Length: 312
Ligand SMILES: [Zn+2]
Image 1: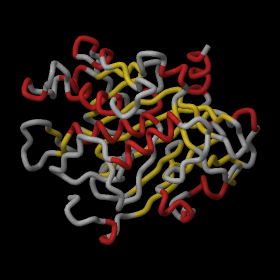
Image 2: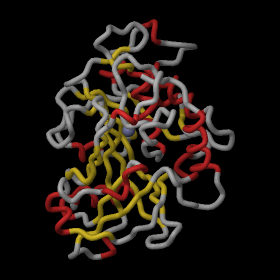
Image 3: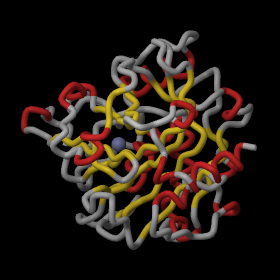
């Protein structure tokens, strides 16, 4: 039934009447219509309630989300990158798993080399919305995604408790796609021109689980940029707090660090507004960009004051 729903969704994506904005907390209120183009002119906010997004405990199951890795990405791994027989993706999945006592977030086995997915080089992002949660290498990148994005997480979710203060997005699909067209990545044996692939994956897995970006000056793997050579392969206290709040908190209280606001087009029918799609980019250059249904809805740039000494 879910797959039927997603097929329906794919078919009607151009007419989908809801969008999702993922906002950097420190600049949420300054959403600019200048970069919003037609979407801004034709849209209105249908709900201003801050909320969060997460997978249901049903989706997590007892063994966690099954995330698979494409063969062409696995081919990038060197023998020296493996630790305790875990490939680099599995190592980062474990890092998130270790953050919670109550739930297993990811099934480590599904991401093994043995379970590799066929490589996908879809031209359109929407085509990744299949029934497989995947982490992919992309060598041609996407027309409607910034070239300076190291990687993106695309997600789909269902709005729950619409219009109430307990509104949140229940995630139903997500994929991580890594930009091998514009960037070079390494793990254990990097050259100076390479980004740390493990750090990129750890960050994107945070989005995959429902986390937004931290503020620029927070000490977190969820800051909206990653500088070359920087390794962030372990979660910081900030990250542990946020994931714990999201999945272990009893009530669906809004997270102060993360806001979702739905945008509903004027001529929309409410019944079609329940599924939303979002893309979050991890930028190499420090710009924070959020894209909904192919349109840039939010952007702001890193300022010198956003840096903490010693972090970069
Ligand atoms: Zn990000």
